[in-house]
Length: 360
Image (cartoon, rainbow, N blue to C red; front, side):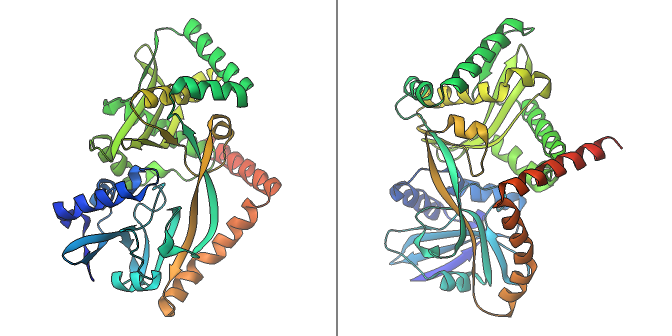
């Protein structure tokens, strides 16, 4: 058994195909964030991205994508935006987590969306989170019938607003599942940036590497990982949009937003229903709504996956330095989040501060 560490762009075609085959044999949801194409796209905007490749008997049998920072600090590829993380290993291959880190020259490795079924990192998670999903494997009609049973008021209200939009809109209401126009993507990113600022959250698109990554992924077309921009239009005017990634069978939902001028019609909810319908027609079985609680996710979901957050460390001075720089703030965040009333007040405070900044 040997390990070589390479830049993602240096992976051979043989290694790339082996990665894809291992994912296909894994048996879990074919999340596009776990495909080699996503790692390559991240490496184009994050040059410290690397992949450790395990070889055995002349065959590549394992892959571990990561980003290497200073002083041996490491994190999952696309940390902070990737919705599924982990190693891609042949069944039965289980290097120890610390041995894996040593092979990569890492003192620590952070993850915030580790997929379920990663035995190498068993016990490393400090928290687990639900990732709601929409199952449309039996077709959209079956999904809508389920919604009528489990969320009847939500479905009735959303469909009524969609009809009202059609009556009152100045133009035809239409939906495009896979919009290639970069102008529509720019509109979505502007809406999302405004939403981040309006709610007092950090603007992800203010980080150039995230903006560049999304633009690159919008043009990506591969069976395992393609960018999909879905847009709800009134005439030629976009009023809601979503950008995510898809494989053959999974649409990983990522960045949704809408024009606040049309808020009374709930265009974001209408958009998600049309996305589910189009995804089912395209052979996609699961829409992964991503980690995080939200009322619209509770209304739309048919089930949940689980993702994990945590850190693996090789004992030593470097790991201790990373712990000191990270854990106090994380502890405060957990304390607030685990107390709903306090978390609600914190959100209200952030929104109020964002409004004050906007009025200056």
